[in-house]
Length: 247
Length: 284
Image 1 (cartoon, rainbow over the protein chains, first blue to last red):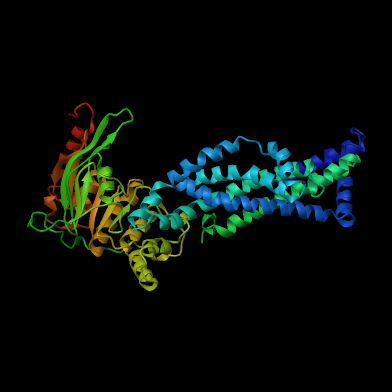
Image 2 (cartoon, helix red, strand yellow):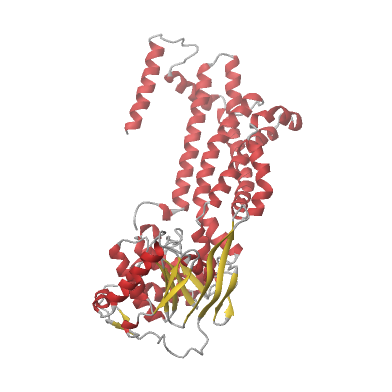
């Protein structure tokens, strides 16, 4: 409840600044205008399609990145040889900012969906692999050794101890990296796209429609929050044993 | 375990008996050296030899740094000896196995499994049929007094209860020997002696051989049929101590143990050993 107070203050100051003429209304539209524009965008100008495309890009590329990063990260965190094989490659890529690949991705894949998916994929996967690898290698040795003295074989222990022990942390890593994925999505759509939330914002800039830009920012913020809530819900649903309440 | 228990447990195997039988566990000339990065080698354990018999509680006692945990880990198969041999029932020990289940000082409950599932875990690894798994788990959960918590996740259990889960889980898996590495070291004093008394019940009921590491003198005398006192630099068996004053009985309660003639002498003797072997000034 206390947190809402700051938001009310924020919008109050914003509204006051515009209505009193402290700022140029052309550059800073009032929050009321932004909400009205948002409604108009959704109701009359098919903005839902742009939002849908953006969400699809996020989910598609993120799931693909997870499908590779989760098994690879777990294997790298579990087996020294797998780590020795892949880690020099993976950690080098982390130092290459994904947007640096935009020009070449455009040349390779043209202007369709592929370059956007590739950018998001590249921006997320190497960090995700590293995070999951680190979490996996931090699974406590006593847990693994306990399973060994109970007669567990290597692969049994991987499946029945390492994976369940690391899963909650994997979900947290995914939640963190999904936020990063949104950043790359907007970059991709602003630089080279005619569809999606970012593209709409770039079109609006050409016509000085600051209210539409603000509406776009608002939508991205709300979507980010929604995905975050989804992950929190998943955390509770998948790992009930972590919850504070007794039974 | 709140119900009153018999003060006297079934008698322990007579340690002075016939030596011709094959011991349950035998360590012969076991040594372990580590190679430092500079090429120097450090001898951590040297020439450790002792036997533990069937259904005996054997305690490795000694000052910190004497390598008692390393010896236990070699018995578990989690570490390899550099020299010497270890045998269980006459068979050489190679790598970790179901027959040598270990309880650690750190809590090892699997958070994502209930108490019941934790205790069934080892049997699941070893493909014990479902029905038998459940019955054996229930039996051992009852033995450690956790029946009311069978459906609870470990997160909601106290430290002592988590260790009881670990003990039940290991015993339900039917090991030939139960290995324990300072299992009560992380518990508060009261929980600790409750667990020690519980251990006496468990050992009697489960009829199992135990090899346990501790640096708690009272705990060692209370639980042990045989104490291997280890000293440092390098770690070796300094003296084998049989608490003969217990006359082969297992005492169920600590106050009775402490009241026995001979307890004080043995505690004094071990304390002196601890002081001699544990301080760096007088170490050889």
